[in-house]
Image 1: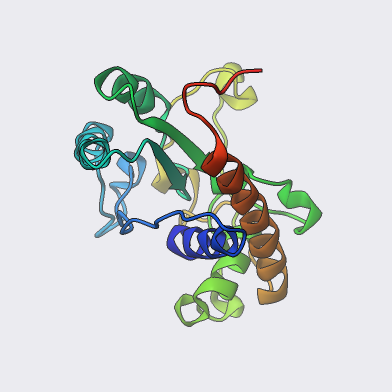
Image 2: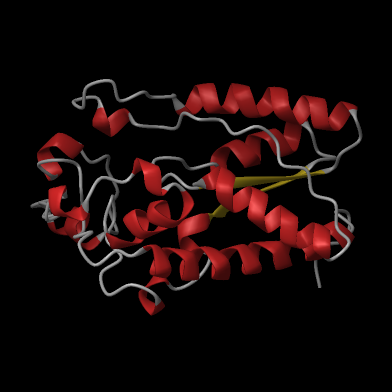
Length: 210
């Protein structure tokens, strides 16, 4: 999904005279809470930092001073890595886009869900429909929440153990998902991301503040 979004947003930006390059997708993310799921591949945050460091080193060597990380996986969090890399490679401006937060998903979906719910399923139905099983085979997306007040309300954070949260790791009912809704969300978010790329294209990384 991230690859499809990146390519489309970059295409739109190219049409406006910008020249973003889409680097190869890193296919693994942080899945430390899903180790109970067979063959669920995990990349540790510390490994992500090393991979990003190598990528930024190449960009810095070739005098490319802007890197946009397009994140489509809730387990990933690049904020602390960006802080660390900013001291190692101060000439490279690094930022991260969380695709799911680019626009208000509730405009497009009755119940977006959190994991394999209506939003994710609809997006996949548009981007790679061959990977989506019939919705009649989908679970209901019922999930369990933490018992402790702070964790339940969200002002305390902890890792969720997905096999205890949900029967099939689905959180949110995907039954209402359609390729049409997925396309509407995809089109809107790639428009917004393209606009950001256009702004970043002309921006001076040494003069970013009003």
